[in-house]
Image (cartoon, rainbow, N blue to C red; front, side, top):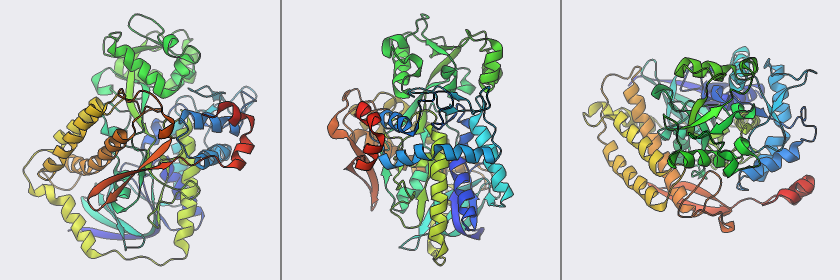
Length: 573
């Protein structure tokens, strides 16, 4: 058993945008920080957030302000979001943009030198700041450079499998150094989970391989609550062809810059579903409209719909959408300035996740914090496009500051050696088996989730998925992994399945519990939104059992209602 130990005040698990922002802030608040990510630094999923980042700067539409941004976010989340979280998001957005500029991020500008802002779906005004269609990459580049300048200790390609507690608070984690096949024990005073979402549990997804909900499972297994896990956003547009490109995101900025959706009959079908907002309606509604057209027999040759921006000049497309132009040229040999794109919905974003207090990002496990897509609260039942990058910066900063503050006045907690040995035995157990290969189960889970717990679902379809999940739990005990521990994809698949079994059960049970349709959650057997379901659904571990319970959505504080004034009165649900 090759295991080494590392110590730090604050361990940050996940090296995407949220994790990097937390690491920078924890470091600036005096903490000794370790950043541990499953991939190479700078390669996390944040780089795929292409369209832009929201802040009500009012550079294009002067009427925009944080109050309008608040109501757009609150309403798009179908009033299921936490008002305080939304307030923090929209009030701190401009400062987050300013910090990025100070760190070297270069946003597109208006002719008079202000940051350019483009329209996005379900926004009242143009507020999405952008760097062509490479915004996430620009933000990550700026933060990676900051982390390196500050000398933040970074562990690349480390897969965290378990969090430890001394009975009162978190004490550290066990990870696998994927490159060396060795174990690493991280002994830390505080932990920040910033592991991203779980949309890769679906067959067709815009997410990379690592987003299977391991952060959700880590938190759940140590006693934290999960919240609103049924709320999975399906992005309206991803590539459908060729097969090797299926699921790759086609950014909303294509529609924001004038792209229109057509079915195989060349009908602009959004005129039937949302005649006012058309292609820039809420993501859940546009995705369901596309899915409906496909299943009505109006699909394109490869099973999607057309996204057409050929009416725009080529130099305009190359300036505003250079990444999309290259993506379609490289993968599908399609010149989007002359040819239409084939697109279809794909699982994209997790609105639900770890329950964390918005003002501190703390969970109910002492010393455990969480930020970014792995958390619930701010986006409610449907995320407003462009809010994800704002989210990771605002709450990454809060989580880093709070974790550093907590770690200052406590001693290092201990980690029981028995716990380390037990976990190492558990994660290496499949090397002693010659049973079913993990890739088979992983693919089956993704297929069943897509077919039964996707854009449209029923009690019957979800019970089918739950029965399959119970079958996989039994089969999982006999999974066999061949080869050694160094750079072994089969072993990573095995570890992914451990997380997926927890995450998928939480998604299915929460979706079964919510007997209505709201935002991204659409049930064909309960197609209406119902006031009595204005509740958050929580999931927690009791012994070996997953239990669910409901709490009313936190109301708007009277002071916030007064601040919002006419914006609230005219738009409340």
